[in-house]
Length: 429
Image (cartoon, rainbow, N blue to C red; front, side):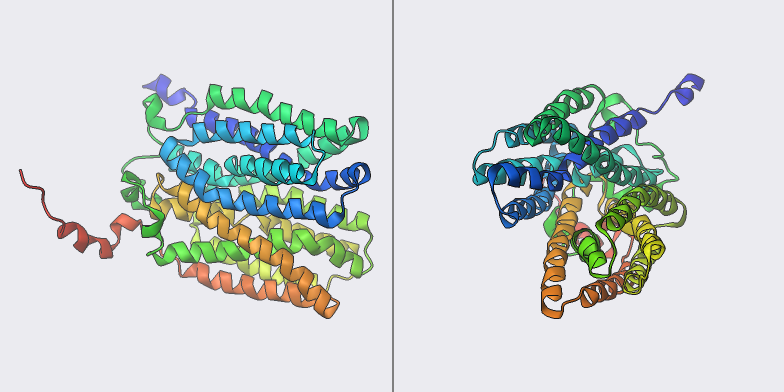
């Protein structure tokens, strides 16, 4: 008994392997922007043509979420991770050989995005939900932090490779790297479920109870059934606002907004770097907070602070104030992931979190696309980003209120389902 207690729980090894793979995948997903100018110089494609590949990539990244999440629930996350890593590696390698625009759309816009989506939160959330009951929020915070850390590692690496060997060699080495490093790690260390190794989820037991969705863990909740529960729409709606305010508006338009107010590109780039560093701190801290203080309250608080920070952005007056905004918004940038995904697992059960998180993440990407488009449209119409950021602030405040309406009750424990189970016919014989 003593030896068993001292032995490292295998779920931590699975988590470390998944984090390692996410570091590479999230970095490759975010790297396309640094390839735009070298590709333009060699192949003569316009910025709009290459931006179309980037837009397609964002859409595909979100669109594959429901599919890979469902596959992770049905197949288990291990096979999905293997398939996604193979697709990501193949797409990245193929991008190094493109000679026609449609080939860039197919490789970077579809294959790389689909592979990265399969290695994203829709799949990895199933690992957290299956292996961990206690500290589930912290685990999801670590996974969210891995997404930011990957960008901070791979983007500078790709820039170095481009400077030394050119953009084609950079794509080639990144693709080979993900195949050579990720596939063996997944094969060696990732397992689908604790039961495969004769274990129970970390922290599972009588004390965990309904607080961690124990009642709903016994079956998969289909999307059609989840859509009948208000909590699903509240989670999807608030995550839509998350995408609109973060990836869509701020990530796309912060640099030109800063330029409009007299800041140099270097100052804007420093702000983005600070924001990325604070992403890691904020996301891991968010997971810890959710484990200690619940999920609804922190989620509402995050959206409220986000709204206030966006209003503050309208009055940024010098470099220190720009960096203050970047630090606050960075802490808040992905902090919504742990409470949103943990609420999904707790309400609908750990065997359903992949597919449902995929749909909820898709709403995030729809919000991202709308935010990116709206920022440009509002600027063209008014000559300023002020109304765009104000619209994001208002949406953030609305999301804060909607978060408090979420009922964190496992779906199979809801009173509305009891009559159906009692009235079910008993098979003869």
